[in-house]
Each structure stands twice: as structure tokens, then as C-alpha cells.
Length: 278
Image (cartoon, rainbow, N blue to C red; front, side, top):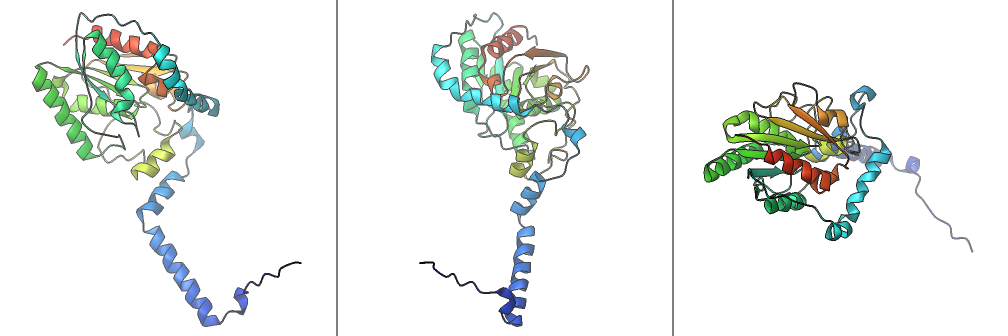
């Protein structure tokens, strides 16, 4: 037996009720449009000319980032030869966007095994730049500089590398070297696969961060950029930079997530620490 479904026809509703419903709907839309959520959604859906996204990794590269899911299985069987440092350094590690400092703990342990002092950035998850965050990281740098009586090496992954470069410009007397890992300091800030998510979460455009910064300008200290052609998140050219935007660019073969654990990255960072002067 077929059940009949009775649906009211809007056209048969009284005109005053229709007008009231339309007005209520209009007010609801206006109220939503004024919310922070609506602004963030608009930022995430922002139109962007294709040329501004030129060079961003293709989907296959992005899917390759899923290798990080195998890391808990691979790590116990991995053997990384860590030589004892003859030039121990004090290092501050700065995590990438949306990442917690624990994401860089494996890299920190390799540094400590070599004899370096590895310290966190002093904040929790990295949910984007704010003046308060920059002031806190700057204070953390100065505290480490004073505690150990020597300059600090800043090692930043992705967005953390942008923090490192800008903090080094503010306090160059406290920084021995800056090492960025897959950090998009050069070219278009939209040449990556995460700028829409970034704008939705932070609530500001990648073109107009709440902190004044000239990302491509090189800090007045030795600055080394690690980049990878296998990066599935950031355009390799943006992470490598151009001459004058960094002192050296070192190509690696790892995923974007792999910058925190890949043996090649570990050995490269340890070599940079060993060669640091100042």
C-alpha cells in the first residue's frame, strides 16, 4: 500500500505568513553574514587567479603525504647514525601550521643524541601568526640566549620557518643561524595546497597577515633553506627561495611531513648545526 505524503504548498500559505517567513530568512542571512564563521568561509572560498597558484604540488604529491601514517611502524626499525657533535649548539624548534611541538620531538631527540640542546618554541599548537605569538617566541629566544650565554640556532618547519626568519630579523644578535624546512618564504603565498584551510582557520588572508613582515627578505644571519621536490604541500620553488633571499638552498627527497623525521633531513640538519659559527 502506497502511503500518501502531504506537503504544504508555500504558494497557498497566507500572504502575511509568507512575508514574515521571508523577513525572518533575510534576517538570518544577515546575521550569518556578520559572523566570524561566514567571514572565514568566504576567505576559504576566495577566488584566486591560476597564476598565483602556479607551481603548487599536484594531487599525487599531496596524496604521498599519507606516508606519515606508516611512520609509527617504520620508526622502531629505523637506525640513524648520529655522530657526536664537536660543535654543540642550542637549538629552538618551531613547528609547522596546525602542528604541536611534539611533532618535532623525534628530530629533537636526534639532536640531543648528538650533544646539542634542543628546546621547544614555548607555545603549543601553531595556529597562525599573531603579534602576541611573535612577542612570546621572541621572548623565548631572548630567554634561551641569556640562559645559555650563546646565540641560538632557529630550526623552523613550514610556517615555523617563517617565524624563525622574522624573529631573526628582530633579534639577530641572539641568533646563530636560521634553518627552514619546507617553508614558503618566496614567491606567491598561494602556491601551495593549504592556503584555503589556512585562511579559514586563521581568519585572515595569506596576503595580509596580522604581523608586519617581508617574508622574502633574508635575515641578517646565515640562513639555510631545506626544500624537497617531493613536497606535497608547498611549492618547491617557494621553499627553496631565490639568491639573496637565503644564503644556501639544499635539495632533499622527502615529503612535507617527512621534514620532521626523514633520516636525510636529520643528517642534513645535524651537519648544519656542526658547521654553525657564532
